Length: 416
Ligand SMILES: Nc1ncnc2c1ncn2[C@@H]1O[C@H](COP(=O)(O)OP(=O)(O)OP(=O)(O)O)[C@@H](O)[C@H]1O
Image (cartoon, rainbow, N blue to C red; front, side, top):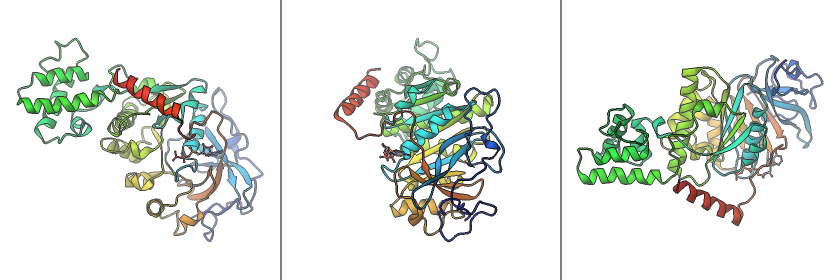
């Protein structure tokens, strides 16, 4: 492991990175990263950032100001930034209350200021609403177009065995309708891919009544999640905004997996097909909730191949052991707040053995807002203090009125 000991070596005994400034304190000479790119209104200036994580050398380009190096005595040193010029895959971990959501919010704020990128936040707790105050920022309800779910994922999404009678009836029905060759596909006044259209098609299917009933009941239950909407924003619309928060409060676990699947897969496919427009950064809080079921393979793809077409991903979770094995091992940026559960420390260390040593549990910083950042590009690790938010952070304890608002929101979803 190579540890940049400019303020505090994460690994203690390990060698500092060759060529790194061995003196604790502020790097006196900000590199060329401090030059803003000409002609870019939103592009943040580096403002003397001494160290850019996720970027080799001193090449210029967009950066995200996230905080400052943290010294052993608790003082802060040179500014620390994250590269935003290139796509990245990151994981952000830490036990409850250590600052994961807050740090994710800092990254989103910074991305919203960068020209040519578009942050999209999956917000399961409603703590990112403050980002809607950013110029061009918006908070939208979680909605997905049923047509964007391929026929094979429907049985699993609805908890049906794809090889069982009801699961395969559903699969075949969705397939026929998406191909425009269902019996009612053209007769229905509804969008042929709507839930109502699929239900109507199942009614006319040549299948035993109990099988049709089972498929229809599961479909109606899913409809009550309130997320299916043929007019849901397209990936082009999502990536066209300065910053988008997708409000996923009150969604069931299956609905979260569906939203995660559609957004993660959709952004990847969109970039593969179009290859133009702002580069999406998908920021996912409580990521383990979205990576269940049908969500998992879509995120796995983003972790392993997302950077090639230009999709960045940052997944925050208090349970790194619940992420797919590729998540931490493929991440080129690991931001670790305090972790105490042995299995979570192990998951982190096992996936990044080259950088994180046996004493990882001991060297993770303990203060709120402090994090160990592992940078795969420069093969180094640093302890940083994350800067304060510019927009309100909504991570406060739940209040009775907040819970009531959640209930009302869930009811609105159910009633369309
Ligand atoms: N960098 C920071 N600067 C100042 N305050 C911070 C910072 N990071 C976190 N905090 C404070 O700590 C609180 C908890 O942070 P946060 O909500 O991000 O925790 P979390 O790790 O996401 O917790 P949970 O897992 O419960 O969602 C915040 O409400 C904020 O007040």
